[in-house]
Image (cartoon, rainbow, N blue to C red; front, side, top):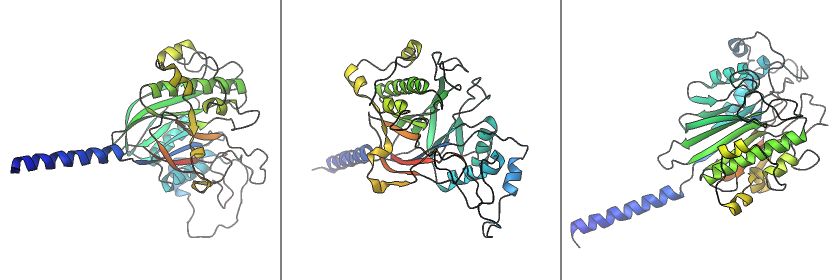
Length: 347
């Protein structure tokens, strides 16, 4: 064997080994969804003032559970930020965030984070946003769009008949910034209606169709948010449509044309979203059960699990842990009336 032949074989073996490493490598990312409760009690307290008012972390509180009930955003925003920071989240979606809240989070997170989202009332900044935030060093945003959960999905401010509010979804396409992987995926963040089950069923049908379109284009897909729908019971239609336990509703033809689901009818019929926590053994599902708690620590009558992270059945992901974190601190302040849902995903 000549030296040249030996070198060629070594190079070939090295390339094959590298291809094996690249094809088998997966990157762990931490996803979070959190309804942070809109700015329902607005005030003029600045972000700088909230930071200056943070208590001494060493000193014992003068009184435990000194307050009760909903507190203004100015008293809650640092708790939201601190949880995002300490949980080391890589990418997340918020619900009910008004423009002040969106801007506060962007300022607190800093230049290393990007975000997309629009106000649901006008498609600019009026009303609640469904923003998606991501670490710029971990992900590159390829493109994003927004659609309304109505019969006129591309007209800002439209709502489904009988729905209590305008509802919107934010969709973003990303790629991983890793020399080991240029994996691409789609993330959709949304908030379904709190009053109308038909509106939720229609919205879930739109979301499922959009996800199936992304799957048909070979994209790994996730949908997260506040679905106002439990897995079982009288308000479960949205959840059951998402996971394939109930047939979807007929949706707008324009939306179907904008996001075609491909020609593989059998595959389309089989596609569904998967509640990621259902893919784990109990020991890997941690924290609390309820994702909605309200603002009264003594009243558990409305506790429910209505916030979810779903992954597409077309695969491209594996979940390694799931948890729901408590957000009540010793002073009696709830960061929100919802708890954050966090999942570790291998891509």
